[in-house]
Amino acid sequence: MTSNTTYTGKVITGVKDINGNVLQTDYIWTFLKVQVTSFHL
Image (tube, rainbow, N blue to C red; front, side):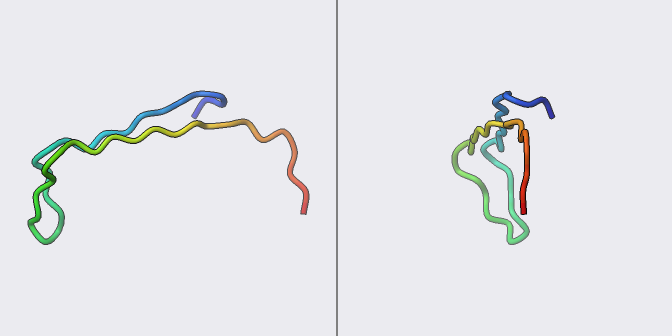
């Protein structure tokens, strides 16, 4: 994944879970991948 980039995920209407429940509306989310320049413990 590229740093400083916004990514979007989407699950479309009609998808079923393991119990057979159907997703009634699209589920869309976004997230930003940032660059970590240093990490200290």
